[in-house]
Image (cartoon, one colour):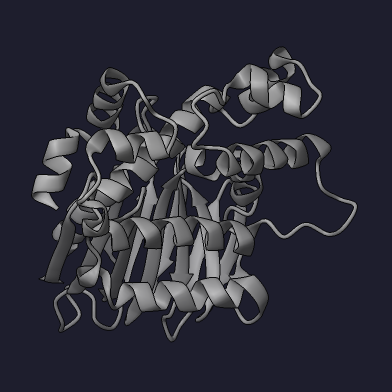
Length: 316
């Protein structure tokens, strides 16, 4: 979702379908026959709360039993490559099916769903589901590992999974309270915790190329204020050629320069939304993150966020 918050209480099944499709991508939602379903003495109802958190969409759905389907017909080449991470709090398990992999998600379980492929999720009556929609690009080289868990339940009873679960549950009750710099900071934390929860790798089993990409990302972020940071300088610092660096980042689907630009613009936007930086000029804020060309900054903010620096500060 592009921004703002969405709250629909006592929603019909049609309203739930519209909201889910707006927050994520086109989905078909139908009421499930059974206690609490339409035609069985009690109308379908659901409460929906959703908001953009950083560059992810977060939603909480509570209500009657329903079936969510992402059909092959609904999938378009123009759809964003999203992953949907769900955390289940329902008293009864939800049934998940994607690509022939089936599982039952119990209270406290995570399940990943790949929005680029068809899937089916049957939520029980009294459902309480947190859902995070995030693009593969945001997860970088970790996207493949996260997507590889599609339709498999991941208990959140210990370690990073338990930390991420607690974070999401708290987030679900405070979506209305996030704005400006807080929203951006929480979004950064969400991505970091998601990666920690879903990409634990046993020692000696990590992919060497992925490790190198991770080291390059850490190096680039540590030096992000340096305007001379580029493919050639980063490659030289890691003893590889620029062509090798391009190839490494090509595997993640996002070129290094594109990733670095997005990281810089995200930090500029976060500072512009933060009243603590009001004494700084826009140029000073941008320079803090390695952007010294005002035309480059203006184009980038407009392309990524649809607003100018002045508009971001005015409308926060």
